[in-house]
Length: 595
Image (cartoon, rainbow, N blue to C red):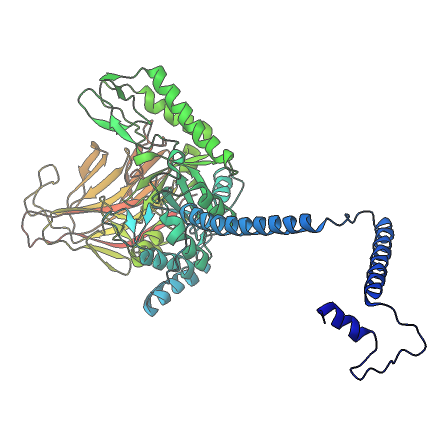
């Protein structure tokens, strides 16, 4: 029996015994039963299809079913597209990861490693500042950095560890750091910084700021300003920052960005003798010929405007601050040189930016009102050999001291040589004594960075230990004679020095002698007082007014050199040729505010 016959036989109700279980129904042939079943199945399929069509009529947005072969092709297409999408996702993710690594990169964490002693010292300074007289530390201290890297032989690059320690010092010492917007508002008279405020700046815009500096600022709650050479952003990878890094840093709130030119941060031959200079302030040589003044002005104007549009084109705020490349903004021009290029660039920078900056590694003063009005502010430059204590000491020396009436050494124990190195003096209460066995002539300036804007003050001291002389001195003193005295308007063209020996008094203004006369009765000590106003300096010895030294035209003019101080005072001492001869001492050195 065939398979069909067997199946039909099974469905017919017969068993192998030959008995019929179907009752009275007549037997139907096997082939007829198969045809009937097929017909019934076809009817059921037709009814089901019609019911589905009726249902589809109620849901017109559902597409009609595709034929079986087309459904298979659609499934294959969808599978292929899914596989392609997976490949695109994998390779796109890899590309995006590579792009992120190139354009953004990682940020490294560096923990500070201050000693307990350092932390205590900085905290004590912060606490003392809270009780300081009003006006103390009124002007922000501006620091200038260049780059951060764990490996470099350049003195301009500090390590992440050094930077972390210095930023932790700022936090512990109670400093607040200003943004570009805040400093600009301060320069324009619309914002008063807190008493202990600082501005952290970086020149050039190197990638080390993002890799190492950003996390350190975040850990200490500080802010910094980076001066960008906008034409170099994203070049020399990974040396310079990319625009994407800059945008992320700006959005973090930890960074502001300002201008360091478009592409003119470079030096090139600018003179016929091959002398090099900043191409921002000099006419450069082109094919051996010096460019025309018109070409120079066009080049510089286009560069500075480009530096501004580079910011706005990348959705960054317009820069309001500018840093001079190489700090080259001369106020004196060599004989025979064209003075116009520097004057033009300085004027253009003043028009485009609220304040510009130069670097000064030798005791600059803070950002005082006089410099802001002149538009040029000096920054304390930080080098690879500076540690947290060095930076702390520099910043403390720059905290402004208001004019008052007090023993000088109580307000500040800072005495510097004109070279800005610590002066060789011993301090005992209000007394100052020179201690330099190999020297015969010494000067020391009292807190020149912190008092550089004083205009009405008096300083007095007792000059003791004067060597008796047999004849009128200074013009014709004996070899063993000594002398000492006070100086005012330290560092200015019009600096006044009053010096007395046991028998004679000399007063000079710069290199000009303006008074010379005897000290009656020859003595070993004299009381000296200088009264300083914007108009003149009055010299008083032993209660007797000897001379009033008028300020000369130009003395008070703002100048670019940050070595020039508008106020402060100093002392001077000279001894004879005998190495055993003593310097005179200055006792009870006191300052007083004048009405």
